[in-house]
Figure 1 (tube, protein in one colour):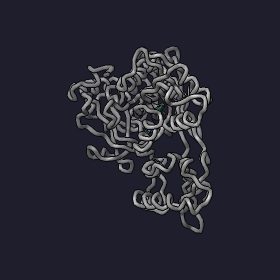
Figure 2: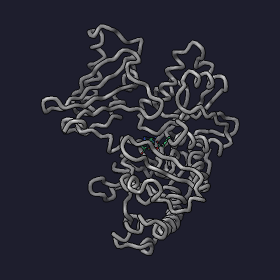
Figure 3: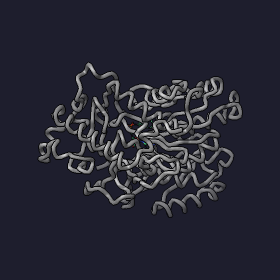
Figure 4: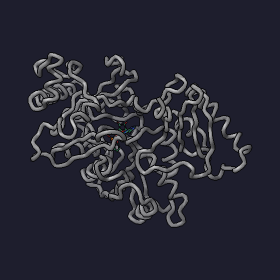
Length: 435
Ligand code: DLL
């Protein structure tokens, strides 16, 4: 189902007109109400009068995570506190969190973004959406929650964790929609299959909306098979609102971005210039409707490309390819760029392996080491290392051909790799702790 056909299927010319109107308004507000943006625009010698349409967007300054941290907590807020009804923050591993604040309209717009994604998967009244994203400052839980309510679906706010109870409720309450990170969905699937109290035959799951971390087509296959569902990608970031900046439609061939609310650009992260249409680069967003905390040209660090070809679903909203990774996640090992998602892609090509992995990079005697812990599915695991060799060799060859460097692969016993409830951690780069 298309939640908002007028917007989601709008002619491109009309969409650009709408984006232009909204950009002009947003820039004016930023200039008049935000010291931060006035200073940034003054530094570039521009005023709101220079922004006459969306084509002028590249004249505007970028905003970075550093800027948000410098302006912590409310430096970018342009409405009085009396208009703010919610605050979220992304955890961030170092320093201050990134904060987003919301007016009532902001919450409404955000819920619509999620509703558009879930509607594409056929969610509506009568469905029970089990929200297993974490509730709290993280935007996943409440974001999915409000989106489900907007559709008139019943939402079950289990949050992440307490896995045994989750799967019992999933069966007993007949949840038919699941919303959580793909890694937690894997963990739930595993718990269902290992349980003697519940069984997938007695479950009613039909589809899932998975995001908040990169995942691969291989992981999609695993989840669809194990949970007997259709698995959809949902994308978002705290700085723009949370989940629901975009999501996949029933065609499952790219993430439609809700361009009436968030204008996407792809830039070359070195030169900061736009890349040629269809090329990979860093995703940048300008919020077009946010009231409490509008953001101009936010550098997400997410690496992807935009696809403007028409989608068979009828939506005209631009599609984004899967996120290859964040530029911050990219490791340079022996001079080669490596993304953790490439390892997941290799692993999931082999049915004997679990889709879990952990990469450790170090430098020993001036040379980078590249170790990958993996797990065989319990039925293929063998204590005797000799018996494991036939499994390691094809994986090793595949990683060398995809990534270009030779890994040391270690097979851990079943459940040897820590399972995640939220965003999975896949890498330890010990070089970061050395000089
Ligand atoms: O992760 C919001 C969210 C919650 C999205 C639930 C989807 C579902 P942050 O914690 O601010 O917000 O992290 C945002 O997570 O810049 C991407 O690097 C990554 N990310 C989010 N969704 C996806 C996805 C939430 N579908 C950061 N695929 C983003 C790949 C994703 N990466």
